[in-house]
Amino acid sequence: MGPSLSSEPLTREDCLALLDRADLARVVLSVRCLPAALPARIALCEDDHLVLASRESAVILAARRGDVISVQIDGLEDDGTTWSVMVSGIASTVSPGEVQTQRIQDSVDRGASLLALPLSVVIGQRGH
Image 1 (spheres, rainbow, N blue to C red):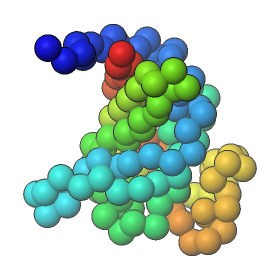
Image 2 (cartoon, rainbow, N blue to C red):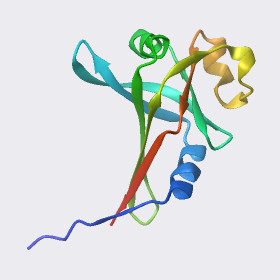
Image 3 (cartoon, rainbow, N blue to C red):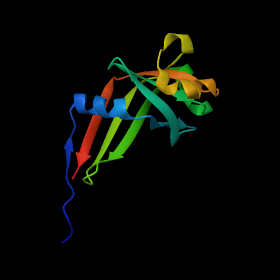
Image 4 (tube, one colour):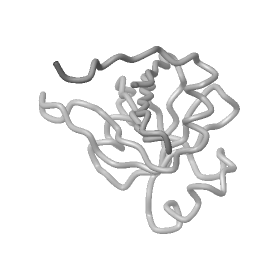
């Protein structure tokens, strides 16, 4: 018999701490009725929303339409423990002047658009 796989849910505070450490995430959305996961830079702002910097037209269009999107990050701890966090909410576009985050400024300087995602749903789990 192989090793047992188990996981435990993470608290909202744990999820926010992991999101705050992350720079890169996957934006999960529907493109022509098919699931897609596209990269974006992220920054946690005020523990109530994420700011995303993306050059992906599907992500930008979803924000302009006010679509529900999800953002997902994963990690691996030094001890081999894995974790995953997913945030979902209604996306919107924001102008660079509305957001003061140096973390993603380089992406904006290279032509990325800024999006905001309220932390409407935050779930996470840690695997053992």
